[in-house]
Image (cartoon, rainbow over all chains, first blue to last red; front, side, top):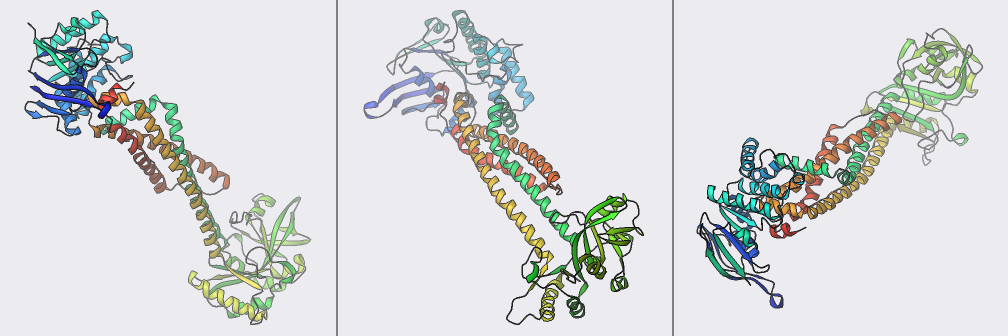
Length: 227
Length: 402
């Protein structure tokens, strides 16, 4: 479904030249739950940003169902992003002083969905992450785990093909982290959602079906796990 | 989407009430000043026009002395004589009347009440020329004038102050040292354009006035009313010719009198008010410009402050255009809010000012709508640059922003 071919990302020029990705090949099949691991600075976040269409590769090709993405205009990439991808961040990135339901509705607003339909879908996503009854709480009134659930609800409300999660458990304690991982695993198994997750915690990676390990801008390990 | 943006903008503005209000101040003051000035200016212009109309229509006034305005400049200028009046009556065409007048301040006494009044000596034509109408009684007659009888016509202020509003015709008042019988009372005219009460007046036959009140034979002014506005210029020209002739002004000498057209004075006064309105309006426009820059400044701050929020929005599917719209709408809503407050403030100020200056309060709907739209336009213009900056943010950079 997603295919990276010899993707490079180089920052700066001359003496300041820094290679973030030095030629990476990745194929993602539908329904995979991939853990992207590696030390900080290993290139895993850069790779994630490219897969998330937030960044462009310096060289190489990035295809989604045989459509070359890296050459699209900014607006076309934004359209691609909002049609097929969902994002979950380490820092939750919810809008403060905005209710959970409104946060979840936000992607739908940008898609121009009518209010009633929006409410229905957002409420369904809230239910899917187990946050029924918390719709009208603001992020400040929710625990970290609950906030991350809202963020996941916001990411899946648009029915994306791929969910990109950047250290989704990085700010959570161990028990909450396992809750979130179980939720992601359920979404992957029950709805067939393809998930790419950056993590450096092997405990969290255990939930995944595939581990890709980065080091110094290269993939050093790529193995599928027994389900 | 647009409605969502408006709601979002209102919410953002509510969150930063104090900052929003301070930001709006420039727009509020600008719009308020424009509205107040235009409204007051319009009221003043209307009042000047109405006042001029009250003075008499198509009126020309001759005064001795070359000076254009103000009182006759004393001894060096010869006053008019009855010969001048007769020559004008004989020579002028297309006039409704020719009225010689002389004035003096005198104390008027009735019973125990007294009042300082402008006493005017003139001829019956005066009431035609000045567009005075009678509410009671009539004018004194030509024969009253010829024989110099002790009769007079009184203004509304006098009737109110000396007679408490009860009928005055037939009563006798004392003007200076002269007892005088009232034959008519005049309809009220109100204040003149120069602020004096036109109704505080006693009008009597010229001869009576010159003999018994003034003690001389000087005629201070001659008022002439032309039949139509088109006749004003030719009548003015022939007045000058006739007066030069009767006053024996040599061919190479300047006029020793002046003939003024009241409509010209009205036009001058209106143009003065509109010039003032224009100048102050320009000041207000500068204030609007400053207000616009304030909006731009605060929007830039807002974009910088909300970089992370913009990053989130871009990541979850907002297009650059949608972010642009959101910030543009916010700036416009902010400015329109300022415009509304400014309009309310301006109208309030104008109303207070109008009451204070005793001019009519005339709301110019066009200007109000114009000011409202203009404040929106300011938001659009000055909000564009910050909004574009927001729209062009790189989502990764924006998300990393703390």
